[in-house]
Length: 97
Image (cartoon, rainbow, N blue to C red):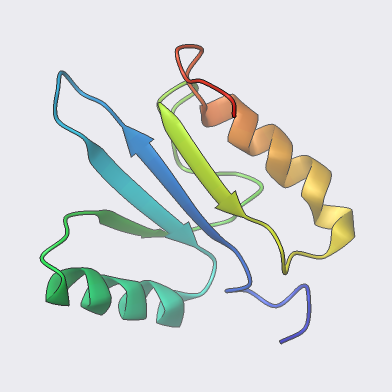
C-alpha cells in the first residue's frame, strides 16, 4: 500500500459523556470503515464509524478524552497537519502518555 493511499490511517477517538464511554473510529477509506463496522458488530462492540479527511476531522475542539492515532503508513509530509488535528480534538483533561 503506498504511504499516501487512503485507508493507511485509522484513528480512534473516545469521548466520555457522563460516565459512559463512546468511541469513534475515523478512516479515509470507506472499505476500511465497513470492515471495521462488521468486526465491531461481530464482537458486539459499540462505536461510531466515520469516513473523513484526517487533516480536518469532523469532531469538535477538545471533544476526545482519548485519542489513538496509527500514523505508521502515512506519508511524512502529512504527519504534521494530522498531528495538529489530533491535538485540536483532544480534551485538555486528557492525559498524554
